Image 1 (cartoon, rainbow, N blue to C red):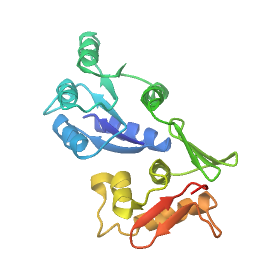
Image 2: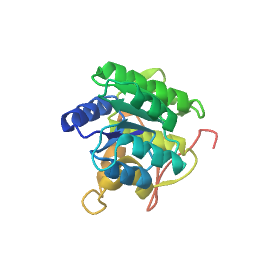
Image 3: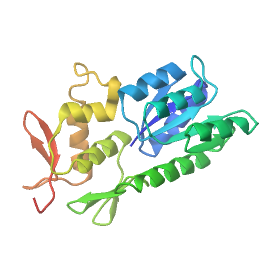
Image 4: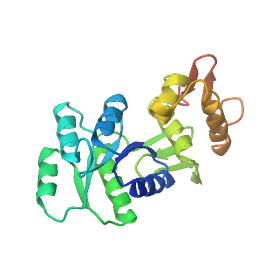
Length: 227
């Protein structure tokens, strides 16, 4: 799952990014409201962490513009202000949760999991194939009951392939989903191959009927065993 973090406190931004990527989320960051809108209108996100006090466009303006545009991505608002007016305005404008600064990382991660679980209830939070099970909320992968440790990129690749089970996923679509605008096809052309190789090794994907099948010249597919 991909999360956008928007905050003009650079140190906090880096801290949140590290904490979320340790939990195998893919993250992108923005330090002002205009940059945040550019990210959101160009790439889909599963969750947005949005500070209220931002340069160029404040968080409440960003929130209102997103909801007017019909973008219903869950949003966790952050604010250092002590009053309740910002919280009321944020919730009225369509925020899904609110967290006052300072906060603990454990609390923020719990709020993130709760929001993803709430909105994930509209779709399967457990996806599986070939005895391989991925939990999109708790960020866990198991095969035959054994827990498999994946990096954030590996988790995102496997998640995307499982969501698109029985459909060929092009290399470009996979790269766009995992790296977004940061993907440079000229300097990063072998990134997908390296991550797929490492992923296959970790999930013990070998033999005559691999879980992740390569469609030469196109991309990859995971097929159900019944297919």
